[in-house]
Length: 176
Image (cartoon, rainbow, N blue to C red):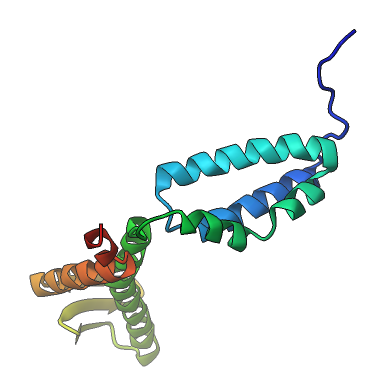
């Protein structure tokens, strides 16, 4: 007699999609949890849910766990001290300190170059917030060149460090 377990249900595409959506929301809610342990929890839950879903169905298995936010709150209550969010800090710092100024200068450069073409004049030099833009819009050439001074690079780096520390909640590392 064969005593091996035979699944009563097979995972459909919808079931896999539901599982991945649940785990994504859980992972987002667990972002304060230490990374290695968080990944382990997600792997274990994925395996448990897959096994349970074969018996009861994915919708029932997920409903039994409850909302991802509540489950995450249970895991987070195990932590003695909240941990910093280093990845969040790095992303936000890069966007604020370097992404926004580059986006701004690029937008001003393209807009001013277009204005040169409409006005009929061929070239101009514009200084905005300490960055010099050399603009050319002629039938032969269309260009925007930036001259960023070291002060701006230093300023962006300083802003980046401050934004990184705030966005990462770095003071949490001191509480350990």
